Length: 82
Image: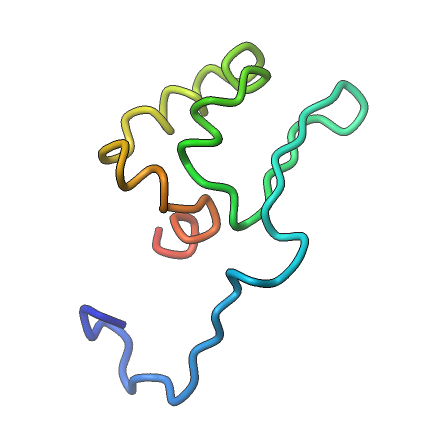
């Protein structure tokens, strides 16, 4: 929207940052890896189970932008932007 790539510009915008349950990061042998839409990229990069079991995801999170951006960027936002 900032780049005016969407025309016409939507009349309403919903902020999902305060919706409970959208920020989680879980890994176990029964359910595998679960990421909430509001999980920060830096959290993904730092999460030890991802480092060990999903090295490609860990590497991708590590090369995404700068540490400052990774601390505010979310997996859901990046997927929507892609």
